[in-house]
Length: 306
Image 1 (cartoon, rainbow, N blue to C red):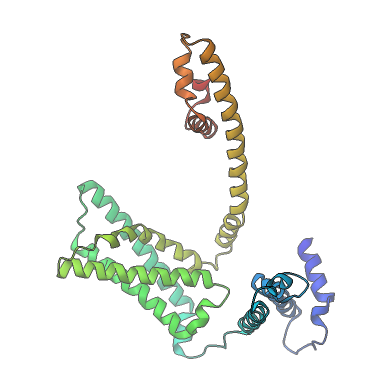
Image 2 (tube, rainbow, N blue to C red):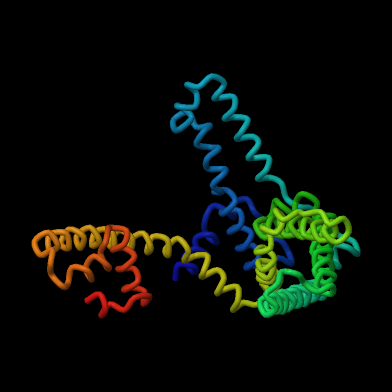
């Protein structure tokens, strides 16, 4: 109902004033363009820039600072310039290749292969109780790193800096980070194998190798069910944070209450047989919070505490 009301508002609202219907453009496409225009006109960055330049809002405080008004106007112009940027249509063999389904399938297959190799490497190292990997695993790691770097360079050569100024800029930044870390990992492996140079500080990035499988979420985003699940998880992240905060507040309140009750009991009955158990489960406010958290989440059975 909310979606239909929004679409009705956009169809009948002022966004289509002055727009003539174009032949070959469907009503759904015109409605989508109007929705994109509505969203882009109220972007958070533009809202902040307009508030800083508004003489009746935050701009009144900014004007009291030397050169504040001039900086606010320049910031507003810069934001308007950035908001007006749009990537031109990319043509050519390389653009068609990087946007093709076959290229996406190849990337997915490489990511799955990298995941399989990572799992096999982890199992082999824990069974041998050693950190020395086989030669073919090192070669495979270099091949995967080279592929990630090559993939990012191909997309960067097609889209240029618009790669970081689009709707999927977060995934593209993540791809850039993965390419840089892959290059560092390859350089580390080559230096250790050729010169025996100890670059152990780069091994702290080893855990990020596992995160490469997350890139598959962007590549296979055309799967509707997966896209809905990922969007649901991301959309409920803030609700989860507030739920944890409420749980923390409840545990703090009851932890203080339990500690005070235990203190009163122990002070009156120091020789009671229950005193050691009470001090074990409720030694302090922090310890009581851990006890309550364990009893709540199943880490500690509540009947034992009872």
